[in-house]
Length: 232
Image 1 (cartoon, rainbow, N blue to C red):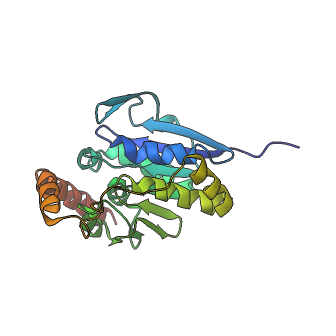
Image 2: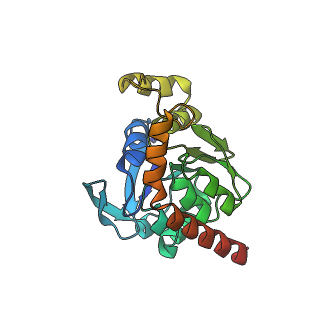
């Protein structure tokens, strides 16, 4: 009896990506039975992410197809939304993918590629409203699903997102087995992980930090959204 074809997962990275956006889900999805995982970027080679260097990346153009495409986020999202060569590869791979997915601000990249029109989508709380510029409905959920589009919220939501995907592909028992294997049992020392629960002073501090690049990100998102409208 021939072996079933591997389930090909592609993480599409860009300079300035947040590494936990993809290493968290990578850790989970790599344990999916039959998974074949490729980490790629537009140029291939190396990508720096928060001071860590990820090497031997494939070139997206050399990836023929995939079953699941995942675009993580990060501060480099602003530039990624304007990188037409990168967006072209995202559109190409998404066209035949069984699952089109993102984590954190990766959903803004999906939006800029024209893949979220009429879809509900999650994103990091600080940038979530920008999804509307791409014809998407911002969803505050930790994991949002709309058809074959699965999107995770900010950074650590990538683990929840990946387990949700595994359950959809291979069943809840497999997802639970992977969750147990990696001992994913969140019990944070503080309830400051959402703007609704964080102390006001903490929320103000982080909002100010993100505010330094907010105008640039909004401008990039508006430009990408306007380009989609012209091409529609």
